[in-house]
Image 1 (cartoon, rainbow, N blue to C red):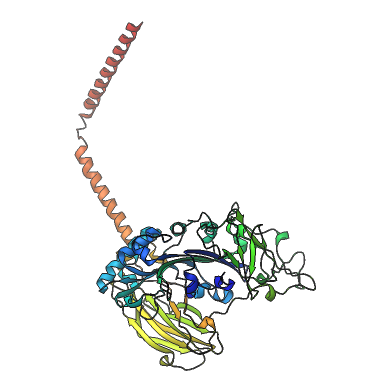
Image 2: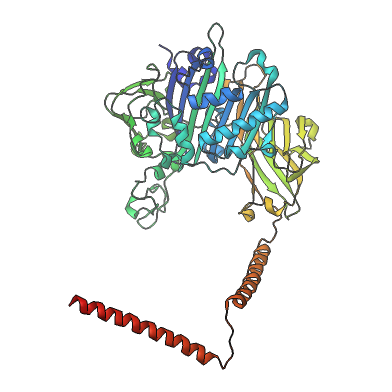
Length: 600
């Protein structure tokens, strides 16, 4: 049987376990500070490449496999993200950020084509097909939202000599609203389709009520040495749930203030009394159970999954008590910081984590009962600078928290064509020093925008010294769009995609394992305000024109259908009409009386 630690390591780096089973699923739970819970759902299916090419998809979803075969897709990565990851409170991102995308929808793929024109046509076909499959607006990823990254992305699969005719294309829709319509197609790609196993916990009401959530789909070929190549599809859902909000019953959807006797107060404060309450520390954690957090219990296990892999794991210290339903077996890790559970194949499963004890002389400390979040390799934030409707600027603040390690990364921005940046204004400076741009930025790739044809692509290779903060700034000019190019909510602003940061592996000897692999992170998206015309003026013109046409038409129609007579002829016309009506009424009355007499 495989070691327990292999279940907690990302499957991308364990080739010996990749082919051990055709289907694998696992749920990892990790309590976070501020009464939050990270839930990571991972589903992985392997299909032989020979069987896939023969249209024998096995566990690979046929609907997606036929699309990839039709357009010649060698590797695919799709992301649906919503919310913001709080790195200062929650620490490092799950999966080292490799399963994370920018706000909205993000897609990048390697397509096999002989020319760039052929790759563009296949990209158009791929985005339209995926748009229909996932009920998303991927068909709006046109040439103005498509880039060809040079330094930011590298293939994750084994492609051999086919890299020569492979083209990488990347597109993002930062304004896309991720909702239940995207979750349902995601579940239909799974073998058990949300009816059994850990996927039975997925509920749109809980997922999209999370503080941060990301859905990822990765398709890549893997060819370990001495083994047959397989095509792997990995589906991942990560969410950060607010425990208090998630425990709210379905019958009480509107959060209401709790009564006074239910408030959790810190009684150690000297000013604590019956009429004052200082909230207790969020770090103490809240008690929660699986069925209360997700609204239902886990429905057994998926019969197709690997029986050796425990489906549920939780990252809490060994001394912390956990209660489960009968029939589950517990396996603890050697480091004492996590444990996994084998779930009965049939029946419901739930687990409860009680609140930490804080009373008595032998009270446990918070550090002993919680797993402290890992410090991220890099902190990043991005915002607009300047004012006015003509020009502006962008500022990115990148902080290296390590006291003795240099961080090297690739910073990429995909900007819309109506943001015309001035490359000569690009500046990179280290806080507290007078370092020049050339001392920090090692390489620059810049592809200028063309109006209504393509956007701006900017990639920088940057090195940050230990315990330093780097400020990247540049200026840009705002374009004026045609009035037909403005959306209905033009005054809201235009979404600018998040910056993509790829942290490169460290080349220094003795680097920790977290620094020996590639990791990613995304900044938040931006909201750009453009010069907007007064759309009330066209509305006023339309109203004025419609009124004038209505008056003109009414007058002409009145002249055509009205009958004009003299004043002296009005009485005769009226009398004639009155006489005709009187005669008609008399005839009808006589006819009615005659019919009534015959009946009698």
